[in-house]
Image (cartoon, rainbow, N blue to C red; front, side, top):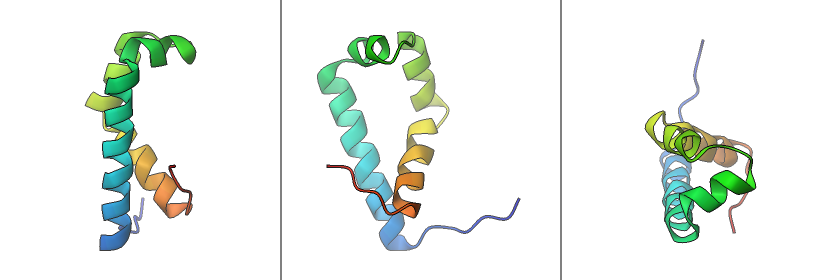
Length: 68
C-alpha cells in the first residue's frame, strides 16, 4: 500500500488535534466518553494504545476538516 506522508504543516496540525482530543478525553472522562458512544472504557484505552486517535487526527487533516 503506497502512502503519501503528511507535510510538516499537516503533521503539526494532526499533533495539535491529537493533543486537544486527549486533553478533552481526560477532562470529560474516558468512562463518560465510552458510555456515550456505547463502548467499554477499555475500548477507548485501546484507541490510544493502538494509535487510532493519531490516525484519525491525521485523516481529519488530510480531509481538511477542523477541530474546534
